[in-house]
Image (cartoon, rainbow, N blue to C red; front, side, top):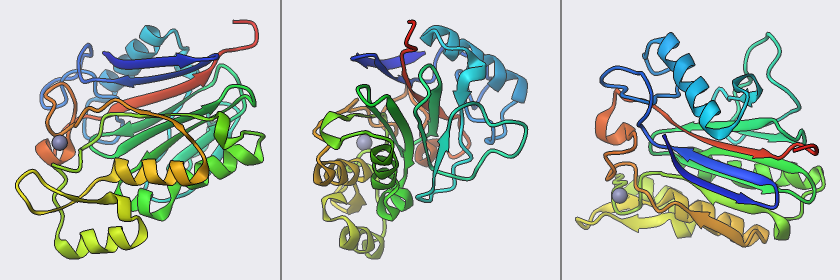
Length: 246
Ligand SMILES: [Zn+2]
């Protein structure tokens, strides 16, 4: 259920795998995505189970309507009533509020500066990485008192650079924006390493505490991969700060 979990100075980071939920084939088992064709009741149950495993109130988990852009929303509570904003990063200064990002190959990036009390979650696929969604999230954190040198960044399961084959022209386009993302598949064709691009962006911003789960979603049978399976579920990454009274 919770494949990877990290905690540091009151900041918590967690990434799910695909097991421990109630979704039927082809979403088995712990699909957390609400827009992939799965039974909404199963998704609700799965979200409640994952929250329980993390000690979170499912009502205090903020989800995004991800659109492969670089938009950032600042939140201090669950979206009230209205539409969930179409953004690919969320930032909060509210302790105890969890921010969640959904992926199945794209790179989930969780960020926190526990000293400033600022957390962020970002969805960085190829378009989002090149559009700069992670630097945008870090900038929004900095506006709220975060310092890059104090930020902890955790990068979750995503398709790796040896598996993410793209046309030569697309690789050139990405590399023109972010040279570190230029990659080659294990079979020698053009590829993109989105996580490497994210790491390069973080390094330039002065974020040095960066760890990656090292899991390639396409290679791992324990994770969802859109490129491998097309119709499939979504993994989630969660970040939150301890409440003052915790
Ligand atoms: Zn791979």
